[in-house]
Structure formats: structure tokens, C-alpha cells
Image: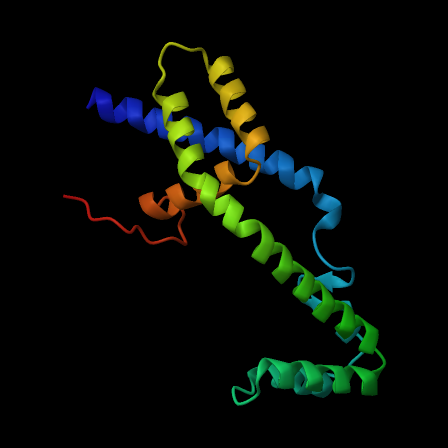
Length: 173
């Protein structure tokens, strides 16, 4: 039981440290939270459309027979007709740019995950350090591999099922 409590505390501490670091990173990049004109209930360029026009616009996405290219073409035609063609072009361009960033950066992140995992386990298994030292070690690792700790935190939540939206992928015996 003591081993379980220690491991649980260790895991909880890891989760807290990564959560705070992720929060700090999110706050630092808050100005880059998305393309201009996007709000919780849809893009602002749809604000001046009637209900029927919005339904027509969203109907483009609901048409399962259209290819992605055809959807983009229809979105552009609709936007041109309603005066917000540049906003759609900007959306498409941003999506393409993001796709290229992911294509370029994801392989490096994946390559580093096992190394970072092993380093984090060493850090959290080390009982001969203070919490301040532990936090400093995690911070140094986060500085060296900026996205890997947050990715591993997410994976941990999926494995343990601690995220209420996640389903655990292991069986309890």
C-alpha cells in the first residue's frame, strides 16, 4: 500500500508540475490562440449572414459526397458571393501552414518521447532530492524538449483514464 501511495503521489506531483508548466506555456502564447475572427460560436465573418445563409454555408461541410478540395471551392464561392472570400482564403492558408508545421515537427517530437519518458521516470523515482530540485530537473527537461513533457502528460492521462473524456487502455486485475 505504501508503494502505491508513493507512486500515486509521484504521479500526482508529475501531473501537477506538467500542468503548471503547460499552463505557463499557454499563457505565454495566448496572443496566438487562433486566427483572427474566430469565436466560440463560429467565425465572425458569418455574423452578418441570415440563419438560412449560415445553414447553406454549414451544409457544404455536411455534404459527405464532396472531396475536401470541392468543399474548399464551394466555401470560396459562397464567401465571394457574401463578401468574405479573403477570410476563407486566410483559413485555408492557416490550415495548410499548420499542416506543414506538424509534418515538419511531429517526427522530432515522437523521436524524443522515449528519452524524455526515461528521464522523467529517473527524476520522479529519485527520493534523494527536494521538491525544488525535482521541479528544477523537470523544468530543465522541458527547456530541452519543450513539447515532449506535455505530450507524455497527455498520454499518461489516457493510460490511467484520469481524464474524464479518456478511456483507460489497460485492464485492472
